[in-house]
Image (cartoon, rainbow, N blue to C red; front, side, top):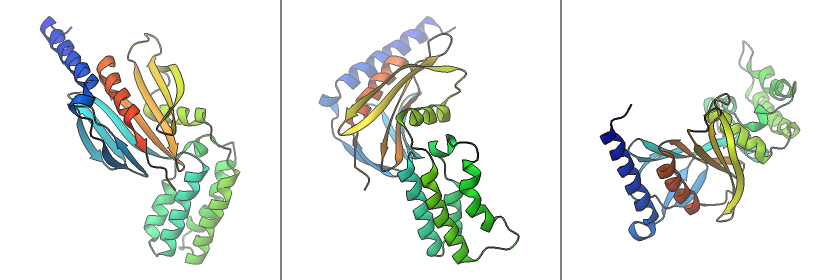
Length: 248
């Protein structure tokens, strides 16, 4: 059990963070521009929070508390086809390893929710020409990528619920956590789905995640760890400030 002095110190730190974040407009209100995978955003970093740029994932930290803003890749049919067309272009440029890696790394709720038989039918044009003792002809493999692009249209459309389930399943154990609250709000022209989770049994260990789709790709803001009130205040400040550049 923590000593009383430790608890007092934690509460004092939390109170200072909350007060500092609430005064963010007075202390630090300068927006910063960030590139997060496919997404270009502008936001205001809460004062006293550290920012770490890891490319597709950006972290905001205050001591042991952490919030992440990340590109979770393909969200919809549009993003799925975009990735396949990029792979097709790489193949025609002679960058065959890069093209193959992009195809093999394809993920997303479309594949996760596919009906029985759809996955095998989708991949068949690719496996027929690549899983062979002898390398396939470049033209033949290029045609196989085109067949994948055509085959993507056979997957079902992705709903907001599908995106939420995909994000939560990627981040936490569904046996331990349950959805406490869910809503959709518009922030600077983008619709964000917000979800609050808690421990399925105790209803403690609250956390929050928000997600939006841009150009077929997922942008996710999530509390990774931290005390509920301080991290929620910083989370809300970040979310309310995010301006996403529309992917064309």
